[in-house]
Length: 113
Length: 112
Image (cartoon, rainbow over all chains, first blue to last red):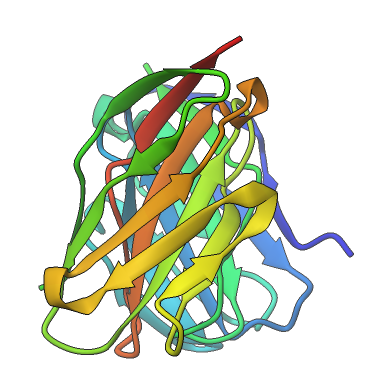
C-alpha cells in the first residue's frame, strides 16, 4: 500500500519557470490538500479538494493552481516560480473532511533561485 | 476564522523528563483535534486524535492529550521522554466545514 506519493522529492527552479508537483493516493480518499512548510510558520494550506472536480483555496493560494480530475491525483502547479515559493511542499489525503486523520506524502523540497 | 496556537516553539528536555506541549485553538463551532509528529527528514504522522467522548485520549508511543473545552485547549503530554522523541510536534484542528489548520509547531529536543 503506497499511501500518498509525491514527486519529485527535490527540485530547483529558476525564477519565472513553471512546474507541476505531482501527488497521488491509492486509498480512495475524497479529501486531498496541499501545504507548504516554512521554518517557524508550521503548515499553511494552499489548496484543497473535497472530491474529483471540486477544488478550493486555502490560506496561501496565490501563485498556485490545482485541479482534481480523478480521485487519485491532485497536482499542484506553480505558474511562474518566485523565490518566495522556496519551501517544502506536502500533499495530504484523508477519508473525509472532518474526523479522519490526514496521511501525508514525503514532501517536495523546492528551491527557486 | 479558525486558528491554532502552540505556546512553545522549542523545548529542550533530558531523557526521562516529563513533557507537556500547549495547544489552544480558536473556532466557534465543533472541532476535531489532532496531534501530529514529524521526525527529522520525514513526513507528518498522526500521534493521536479527539472527536468526542472521554477528553483524555491516548496515542502511540506513550503520548496522551487532554481536551479542555472551556479553555479551548488540547495539550500533549508524555510522562517520560526518550531521545527518540526528538521531533517537531504539530497541533491541528479540522472543522466539518472542511479546512484544516495547523499550529506553527514545537520542536522538541531530548538530550540523552
